[in-house]
Image 1: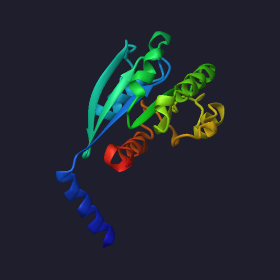
Image 2: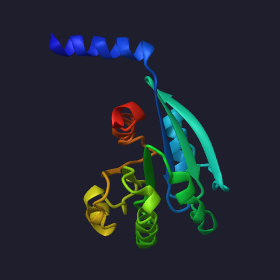
Image 3: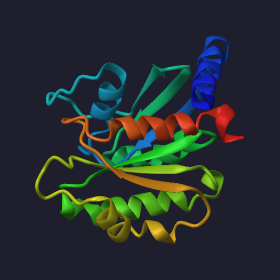
Image 4: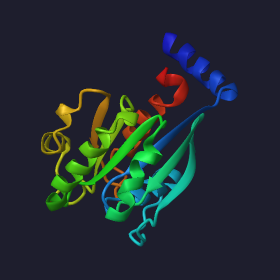
Length: 186
């Protein structure tokens, strides 16, 4: 009975209170950042993606939360922009191609370099190991270890293994994002 009342209250609140959040999506090229945005926005996966040149901005509404997503290119020439777009956001989402183990070290270095920036201190980080549908993909525990995520102490950090292609764990990723919207973060 209590759960029913809570759900009714949540539904009633959603009619009147809209929440917004802003996040930046970064990671090395070909990790699946733009594909992720398309999957959460439309539910559709496409293998025919072109690399992001510079950045894209997209607003996605899930329930009563509108998520403004800055999708930043992952090529080396765009990485200097990452910090600028990460300032003041509710969360940083860092995408890793979990199946490309040769790039995990470079990805780890880029993530830790980004998180060392004083202006970004305290911003929660969600690390997404994409392409878990591929046999060579690392799982969450392996990513946490290889990317030395336990060393990150100045903020909340979370790691999920996802597949944009199969839509695996997209739901828990969205739940994490919604929990970190502005009004819930305070």
